[in-house]
Length: 135
Picture: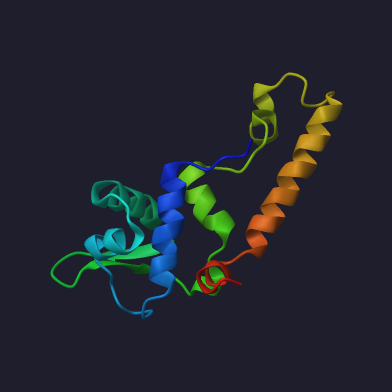
């Protein structure tokens, strides 16, 4: 089963909320968590991760908070997932071929790679704007 973490779910909710706000306005974590029914401490940590991945920009102070680093149509679902989950893979040997001594001879390796590539393509085709506007 392909399952995203609570961290990723909160990241997506928060990013959707930011996508619906005026582009240049910094939004405080407190506002994001109230609107998305999420934990302030957890969301603050998640948004630091999103900042490290250049998906959001942060500002400190009275008018501080977070805003998107670029337009929602230039942020993909893959960007958000990889920021919180790491590389997309259905099998570890596809990401870390050195971890599997059979990667050069295993016929399943080719199938896992095709599946991973298909998932990546689908995630790249869905933007934050798509999600925020309901397609």
